[in-house]
Length: 265
Length: 244
Ligand SMILES: Nc1ncnc2c1ncn2[C@@H]1O[C@H](COP(=O)(O)OP(=O)(O)O)[C@@H](O)[C@H]1O
Ligand SMILES: [Mg+2]
Image 1 (tube, chains in turn cyan, green):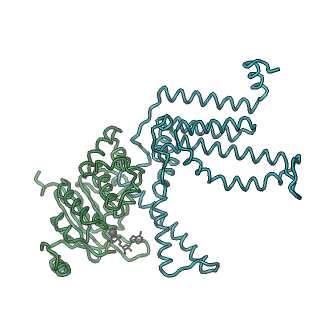
Image 2 (cartoon, chains in turn cyan, yellow):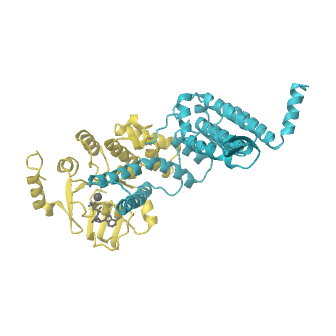
Image 3 (cartoon, helix red, strand yellow):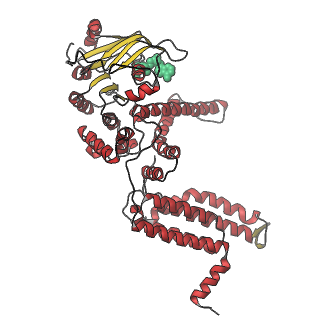
């Protein structure tokens, strides 16, 4: 069942206009996904942690959420360092660990952890309903907004229906094994689930029509942006632009730094 | 005009309907709902009650027959779009009706579709919720409501559209005694005419002025129903009830 543990709160980020948060999340994700330089990725991670702190989310609840990507990353670390061609930096028996492989694995790890943390801080701090309403007011197509809202609403109902079917099978002594009967039963179960979901969708649509729904989606919530939002957007824009410039022309940034801080030599 | 001179709110004439590849569900069905009518419909499962309500709402099209609302015929989707502004249907399964994430969103959905402003829609929704004693539910998440709560909120979503006629498909199914009692109180306070489907004799006795039934795809009015009622009475003989 869906719980939204981070959605309620009273931090700066919680109170920020959801539309600004959605835009910031999109801009951040793009920038980080397209960045490869390690200093940039480290900066991105620091920024993500800063956002988590700004949302006042307890780290001991946020970190377990990273489990989703951890399994995938582990696999990456097991495979990439020795399977990637490049300069050998170490040998583990017959396996040569390449510098490029290590670098790639670190990049992917930093990127995914940073993006996930930022999304938790920016998006998980609103309810799915809010997310939908905000997207609706950002002129994102109605169909997409509906998809999100309706999925959120009915995933639980569909799970219940699955449980019902599954119980019905078990009551009649169905025990899964590796045989044709098992596969066929699973196929029926899944087929039935689709049939029921489709029938449900039809009835929901009928109920919506009965309440004069004609394809246009209206929402009650209205969001307002003020100084806080502009400030947040400006800071994010500045940081992300900085990252983009460093990614494309690191020499220029080094040059700026030396100008600003004076030459270390 | 006196009520008897006003055109019927809903009038069905010789409605026939069959699902594809199945025997007919409705056969030359006639039905009339007049202003102030509070009609109960009790009939066995599968006799076509839900189908009938869906025909009235224009969700299903009859193969033959005529529908009239407020004195005007309805046949095309356009006609039914207008009808749905004035006739509200409570679905048999509340999960079909409540699709919004939160209660307030769901109740406001109808009024917003009717072109009300955000403020008006919010106001109407809150008023409807408090009429049903649900004022604390506005911000609740719909899928986390209990069965009885879902039913009452569904009713709120229909009432918020301020319909002139209500159709209720088994509103008492799965309700505990307390919620049922609440529903009876609500029904008795409604000003609208309604047609409600229920199997529960005590509920019908408390909320309906007439009890119809369905047989072989047609409606039987209560005067034709005498023998039926009597059988009913014997089955529930131990419970106190009225003979209608
Ligand atoms: N979508 C459908 N497709 C085919 N047959 C249906 C469908 N819905 C209902 N029926 C059949 O039509 C008959 C009447 O159903 P329904 O109107 O739901 O009855 P009731 O509401 O009185 O229990 C039943 O025999 C049922 O099996
Ligand atoms: Mg039914």
